Length: 105
Image 1: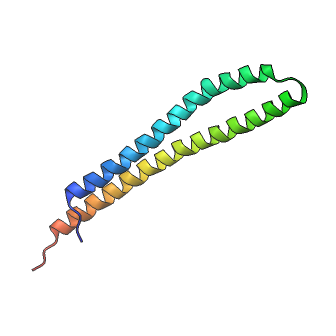
Image 2: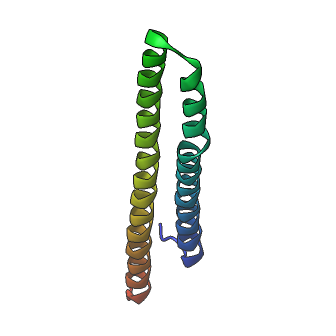
């Protein structure tokens, strides 16, 4: 079944909107990691002493590293989604153009 130009644009814009939402979430995570979370760990580390302090620092760094990895993955997934949406959009538009040029006599 042939997709209309309007359907193609609708699907493309939906995919691009989802990619933008992923980028926004990744951006917010980065802001939190660079600001609030870093400050929280710094403040909390000063409250812990001895072995408990060292364990807290290790776990805090581990959590921060995992969150950074997640944030990077979100950005990569957003970029991949954009790339895929653009490729599918172009393929659909090409297919639509070919279908409209056909002569079914």
